[in-house]
Length: 624
Image (cartoon, rainbow, N blue to C red; front, side, top):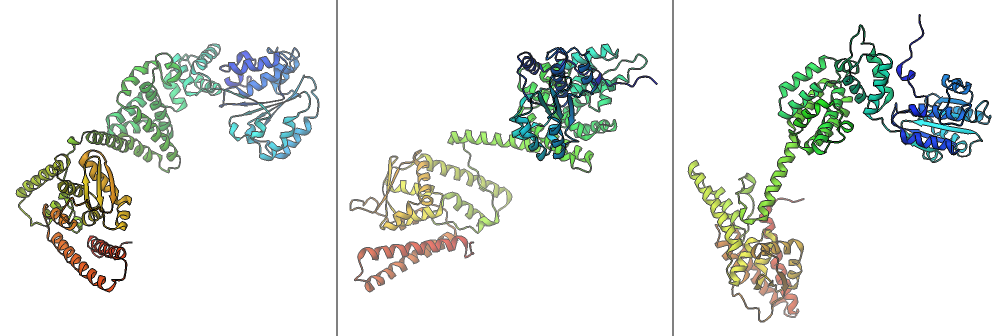
């Protein structure tokens, strides 16, 4: 049996700084440190897997301990270099923190650090996957890392630097390894395939470079695995590589996304079944789709004329097809689909029936119900904003009837809209064609009345006050100003309203009372005039009618229901009874000050009216 086979990633591991691919900044820094004799006592190498962290640590150690060193170009032939290449050097010790992570292991290591180098210039400890050390082991290393013995160097390597204690990181020089560009990996793989005489197409090599995601070791492992297919002069092509790595072809991904764009669920399920029958896993399908939509997002939102090879993870011949397919989606829509795919990928890991959930998830994306709902809401909001910017375009629609509306209380001074609605609901049923004609007439009449209330306003003070009261939407606010106040001046600059009692002025200034009045005034004049609330003066004899008479006129100008007439009758009786009680109270309390009597009379009137209104509004129900 011949010599044992050496995998490509071991056979072609970098032996000098010149062999490192894609880490130019790091190579320059370490080389300059050797040339200037500024070698630190501790280094931290971080980065994704397969980017050269351990290889760089070995090259650095070889450069320091070479017979000709320290040098940036170790000879690779001296005993020290050969021992380090074979892993038998006594001055360069490699440790795996995953299996030596206890505090006892750290203490044993620290005991050996006291020995001086045997044949080299430095004693170097390379600790791989250092993030696996326990907290106690890290703490044991702290003092030695900060003040190590002379000629001692620590090189720590990890793929997860966030798990390393900050106190350890602060004692090291940190170097972050980057993912290697696909083009650099392609050139390296092509060179190795020529040396190994592997018959493989350039498209297959580029596919391997893309699927390695910046890791040279993964790329060499895939090339090594594909090389066994090159028997009897067979040339390795893209389908061969796809079958080995278990990935989807660009044609399959294009077909899936095409069904999602044109909403063809039957075609989607057919393609999924074919892909799954070929042995692909649901998680791999979601992962490949996420990467595919990422390419669509870049094409849709970026100008890739100069660096499309670096950004897009797709073959050059498929770029025109991607551009054409990207026009079927919006940028925000693609971003939302990527978010959903990422969320589904996490949910798929915990599913017991991954095939079922894959089909459900993709059909959900196909219809995109929530995305379409958001788009529809955006259009409706834009339309409403346009209508609000031009009030003449607003179309007033009559609200639909409901059983609860028949029981609602409508005060005497309610707007015409509510009076018409109740009167129509309480009216006997008519034939369908007559009812349809009447409803159209009512809607046209309602729109005409609202438009006239907003545009044609009488110059008379009394008519202006009625218009403002009609436009007040809050029933309690309308009742307060209609029954207990008296206007003195109404114009676009200011509105002066008087109350006989100071307590009513204080209540009218509350936000829930004054705000509806301001809104009604804004509907009338197009702006909010200054509103003044005060007690009446001798010169404030502007309106002969009392608040009660104005309330009656407002009610008579609208359609009255039997319920509203009964409420008005009760209001009249209540006012008369209150006046009689007030006279009796006056005879009993002649010695009391006049101001206190007026206050008691007005307060009792308002409280009785307020209680009456609340009882009628909620029909005697208990309110929590």
